[in-house]
Length: 261
Image (cartoon, rainbow, N blue to C red; front, side):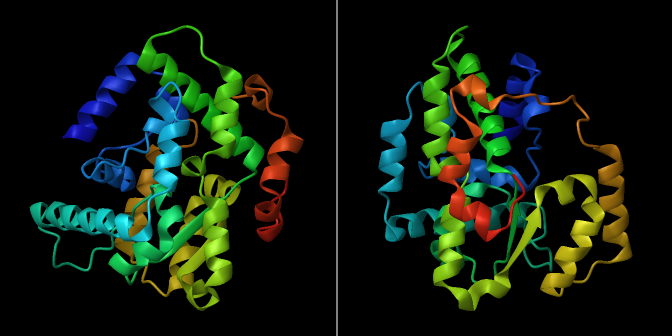
């Protein structure tokens, strides 16, 4: 209910958000609000006028501290499943929140059978898109017509809570025995051939893709084509960042996953 109300308010206030980042309260990003209930507010990185102190505080959280957050996350998930009469079913939960990339060791302690779908994209495009979202969040939150675009660029580029790909890459390098839990998917492939990607994921993890599930997914893809609510346009230069600067920051990540840039 809370997520539904927040989404409704946001889309009424700024219809442009539908083109930037469309989400459903009952979808895989539902766990965004589960962290709120224990005091972890990732959206502060988008809504605060200056989020640097908060991000610094969050980055100082230990695994033991985050373990408590994840245990509470799981308890809330179980309550949701129980209320929907799915608690003892074979249903597999899907969480999309990229926040998990920063705490993989903790997540695996609480969800020991978790598997991870890592989508990668040209970081210059990703950073520009995130800067645009942050700018519009600040305009919406503070009802101002002017924001510090250069500050937004610096905060997004240096804020691991906005992406997390580098942290995930480093964790995998130090834990090669867990590599079977991961699959790497190019964002462009997902956008152009979603059902082919779904089949690839299911095959990789040895999951059964039934005809019933396939039909539901195909129907969803048909009803929700790319740019259904318009095209999100953004420009890296607007935030005083250059492509070379961004690619330098993500150099190891780009090389590891052979991302065309």
